[in-house]
Image (tube, rainbow, N blue to C red; front, side, top):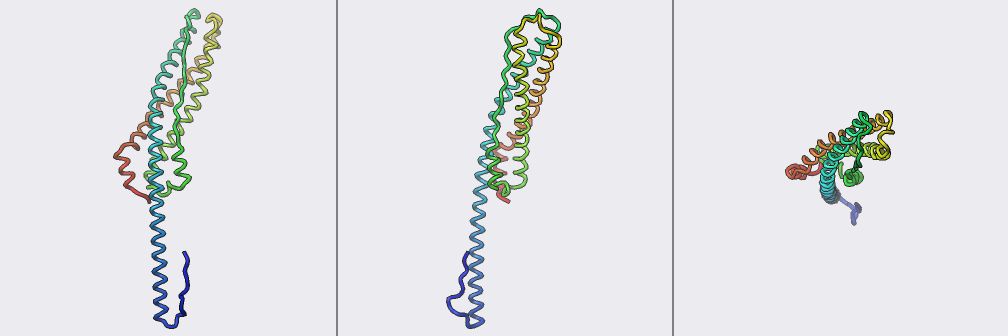
Length: 222
């Protein structure tokens, strides 16, 4: 903002006051316009960030729904394998059939959330809105961390194919005990993921409820 001196020399107090009022009014108008432009920019930034976050959470909810079905299948497969190991521990003549244990992972993204943080959009959102987003993304992170741990355990389970592919009569008690331990770890991870998936899905539903979206959008910026 540029401020220019009067074009003519000030020769009286009245002229000085008139010039002062003119300059002050010009400054106030300029500041008001600048404030309005900033306000509109912040509102646009928040509106775009909110829309992107909600779209991201909507996609994550769909992926989580598929993953919850896969978790049920993994739990069933794991229990079948545990029963087989128990049978082999009691009777080495138990027939071993081909088994399947497929581990899947949901892709829960946080790109829109990270972008909103980087651009500063979060600083212009209502505190309660940012708090709710933070909670759901923190829970997402916990679920993703469990998936990574579960994936490592699933590799051990899939490695049992080599063990169970041998002649059951040659399997030792130590080998079967180790197989049971590995299966137990994998099943514990699956159970933990199921326990987190439920409240995570509930938070998705609450945030994506159309009524909640209207209230959030109506809150405006800070």
